[in-house]
Image (tube, one colour):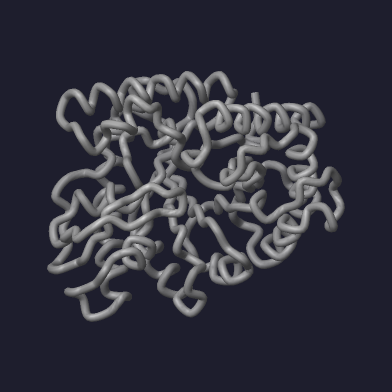
Length: 340
């Protein structure tokens, strides 16, 4: 039992098995669905074996990529060609050419399958309105704000639909993670980030909402505006900017020092701390992960307000490396929980 202390969570994508990734764009219909389901079940088993408390949606086996998956479900967007993402995969970037409307649910089939097969807590990641606007060409709306708010209305509609599915068979709170990797890339637009995210969840009750942001050279701008976000928590990256030296001093845990700023600015939201780097194959030792968590506890003084996760999705690593990182993360948390 974790008793709500240092909940371990998967917060994004995971490497797809070769049999799925190699045909994802080449097949469709029942055969693609069968492969998605097979990969989801295998990833569920892997996450359960690692011991995660919250398995997200089992690594997003139903999604090729976070932007295109949403954009392809909308009217008003045309695709003109692929662009390369940070991990050398390609997705189609869209241009908004008319009013955007939701043709179909983005995540209905994925959520239903996970609900029917998961034995651990679930959290649904969904690409946020600001990132959707930032990553789209705009040929229709008068400015970026109008486009971001249009995406927010679409997301609000989708979340309401998914919450309806959840509430029919589940008594637990529906956990939703708004993914906003673009959130801190334009510091002058933080007001728009806040406005669009808040609009995407406006009027929806019975959910736990969090925001996931990666990466940033300075989270202060997010923390300073974050008090205006009507969310319950953050899930953030730290390990990528941290040292790999053992120790709990500030000279060792340079990235995590920002947590003290966060807690001074907004102590009402939980914070998921990234303790393992998703951009390297180096498997962080249990002791190093413990040191990172202990520093966070010292900064925040309340382990109930801390969740533990990778920096981002682990799709950039092999499934074996991803599993090893998650397993060490869980084992580090188990050691610290013995003290509570």
